[in-house]
Length: 593
Image: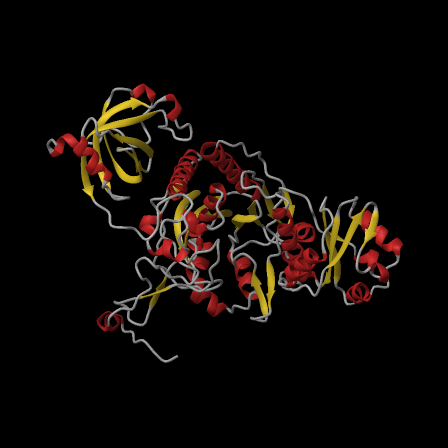
């Protein structure tokens, strides 16, 4: 079958076209499909570029066809043959190589595969657990390879863009000081300094601010970050950020840089135009109209407040809620059509999972208002409520009476559910919005004190600085989040670049000077050494890739993710270590429950 050197690959499996007719080629890849049509063997050979159909004709070489007929799926093979055109009726327009096939005259089995735990195909019927256990097989599926190649292209666009914009890529340490303020740190014990620990960075926040003090002016980094927190579909214990910081800037400067990056990403990766500048929406407006600070603005269905209309309606649920300072709010499901009692009960149960005590439904049927509460409310009040929503025949209204938070949570999530059922949340359409004017602080019932909404280095708005000590709940932040299709994909702020302001911030957070110096003394000292005004932003890169790939979980765009229990089923981490390793670190395991 020739020398080893003669088996050098000439083309990949997605490369051949009709103009390659009669070329002698050598292909290598995996056996993806196997068909025997009356003794003629057809094999789909796959690599990451695509699939080429191979033909083994017993009339040309019976022995070779018999060998091909016994090939196991997912075996790795090399073939030598000639490119021929498929008969017109056999052309496959769904394949990039669908006009041609390779008539094989030599075959070499490079590695025979055993029977695999699941079939390698786009629509995988294996459980998530099985896919993660055999992730190296799952990653062979074309859909997974498509996602990771999209991720690769996004990396390249990001690096080119920031380089052309004058940014410097600088790596920051993975072993750093533990300064827990948000999620739990992952701790790394020191062998040399027994009893002391490094932390893996939740973000390079303090380092990128120090780089601004160092005069680098424009920094970026595609960086791994780590947070020991409860997981979900869009969260992993280790994740990737695009980290950005700039000197001598205001909010508009940072937002402009980000908008141009997003436009270039969509143009270069998805061949779509993303209109910039993005609209801006205040935090209060987002919460009032969408029930969330990460609104999906691809459709309407905004929340409407009707508290004043129904406070004296005579319906006890509404009047009692209003008297206690609560709110009555609702949404309109346009052209919902007649809804059954079962459907409404299902929606009621859904809102109850977000704290709502109940859900009041109002339907407009042939210009008649139909509602279970109609007998308790004056018809004129119901009519005014419907006019407030601009409701028409065929529409349905859903009202929640509760405190501010419950109204936001219940109606915000109900809005998304109804939009999904109505086909208003297509994965092929994109809409971005900036959320601005966030509160600087929020009250933590658990800690019984104010905590930073973003992080403690965020600058208050200049006009609100006077309230920082006397009425901290009134202070707004120079902070901004970028929301894409209802998912926050980036968040940032202008930082405190003067020590006195940063010290006041720590005091409001309940951190005394000794604690602040112990945790952040290095940064505080740096702020007194000519720190320039600066600000930046960090992108949740995995979430961006997930949205642009049309996936519902970031696990589909990460090569080797963890489960929701932070386990790696493939390699068995986290795992136990032997006593000698623990002894070197000066550690003992307490095995008591």
